[in-house]
Amino acid sequence: MKKFFVLMCVLAITSTVFAEGKVEEPEKEKPDNRSVIVDAWLVRVSADALYESGVKPFSEKDKENVSITNLLWCLSDPNNGKVIGTAKTTALMAEEGNNELSYRENIQEVIGLDGSGKPVMSGNYFLSENRVMIKTCSFILENKQVRIEYAFAANLAYKSEKNPRPDEVKINSNSITIVPVQKPVIVAQTQIGDDMFFLVLHAEIVD
Image (cartoon, rainbow, N blue to C red; front, side, top):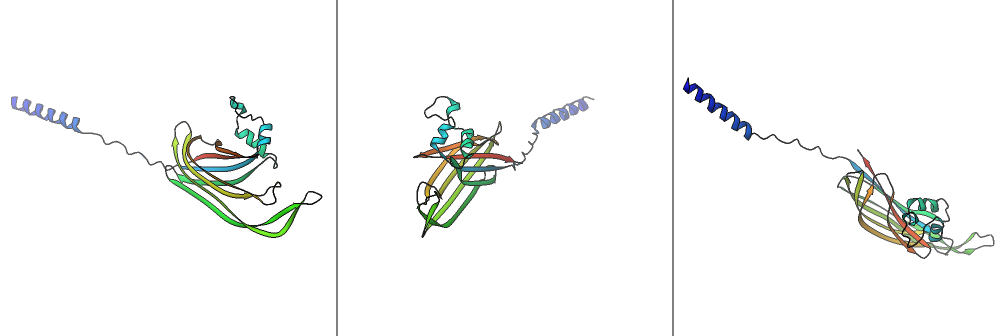
């Protein structure tokens, strides 16, 4: 009986040690296969029209700084604003998305306006090269936010009634920013004379 008791104790101790030494394997995390769609708009608006919409330079009040609402107000009138370049990327989270479009266009030169205000065209044409490029790498954060590493470049010619030849704009912007999901955000801006340019980003998560 004593030997039997000792044997049972040894078996019990061995079972306890084995149980304590056994480590449960953690469940493997499922890969995050969600994608992020990033839309970019390059917007040109008149500085005068922007001020008319309620924007005041150097203001400490948030409501008097440039907002998406102000841009939409200017874009409602083609004479006050226009989207001159767009780009979009779609890529898995933490993967790089690339999109580039370039084209060449022969544009007829405007030499002036006639008595009714219509443009008078010359017989000369000149070559215009246009390019829009965007690269993005996005990371989905908590609280419905997306961290975007982006590089945006544009070389565009756009027609204007002010000058006989189309105006040209070259813009390069690259940065890291955090934007709320499905809400357009101004991430860069600059001004040249009366023309103000804004880069707007919009992120959407796709399961």
